[in-house]
Length: 122
Image 1 (spheres, rainbow, N blue to C red):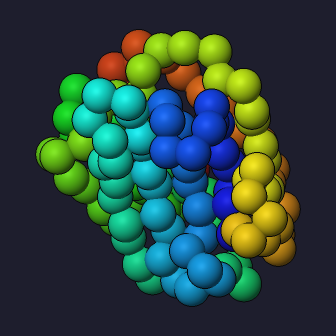
Image 2 (image 1 turned 60 degrees about the vertical axis):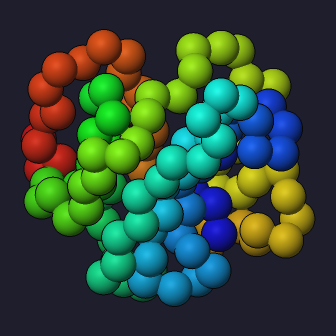
């Protein structure tokens, strides 16, 4: 199920954060028209427990934090293109087969150009 999706069409300048097929995997995907897909998958996410998730990207480094602890990183990522997306979704995606998030989103914060991630417990 999707946690959030910002997209402009099938695998074209899209950003997704999802709980992969109702498993313990969090999948963060960035698609661009130039480089296609880059992503980061991490496991050990209990979908029945309230957690705080933070994702970040700087240059090609993509990171995922769970409750303030770094749980996944890759240096083979890329930034999403800066553009105006045509679709913005929280708790679902444009595709019916993805399903709805079975949970609560307390808040979503998006920063551009931030060099330091504030720990998730602040």
